[in-house]
Image 1 (tube, rainbow over the protein chains, first blue to last red):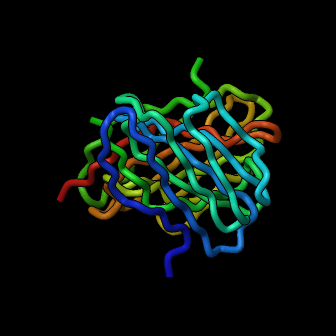
Image 2 (cartoon, rainbow over the protein chains, first blue to last red):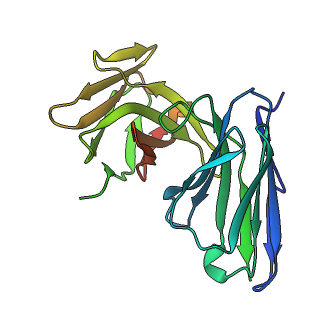
Length: 113
Length: 109
C-alpha cells in the first residue's frame, strides 16, 4: 500500500510549457505539502494545505499554482516552465500543521530543457 | 546564520563503527525536532523524533540541547544499510519545518 503517491515520477519538458504533478495520500492526514529539492539537495517547502485550505506559501513564483480538491489530494501546476525549475518535487503529508511528522511521496524528477 | 546547519560530510566509516552527527539551529522558538534519512534518489523518510530528554531507537540515539540549540544523532554498530544522507529537521509553532542540507554517511565493508 502506497501511503503518499505522486505522478508522474519523471517529467522532461521544454521551456515555456505548462505541466502538472499530482499527489495523493491514503493516510487520512489533514495537511499536505509541496517541497522542491534542487541540485544541491536542499529541500525547501513551497506550499502547505490544511483541509484544502492554503496555509503556507513560501516565496514561490506565481507560475506555480497548487490545488487541493480534497484533503487527500494536492496537485501542482506549473506555467511557463523555466530551466531553473528543474528539480525533484516531493509531496508530503502530516496529521496536523507545520511541526508534525511528515511522510513523503517518491518524488517527481522534473527536467526542463 | 543558516536556520539549520549540518556538516555535509561525507563520513566514511567501517562496518561496526560508531558515528555521530551534529546539527545546530538558529530559531530558539523551535519546538519540534526530527532526524530524517534520505537514500540516493529516494524520498526523505522519518528516522526518529528528538525529545528533550534524549531518546533511543535500537542502534540510534538522538539528543537535544536547547540551551546550545544543538541536536545530535549517534549510530552504533554501523551497518552497510545505514549508508544514506541524514537530514536534521526543526520546526516551531509558527514556522514550517526547516530541513538541513544533510550529512552523507558511507559505511564501508
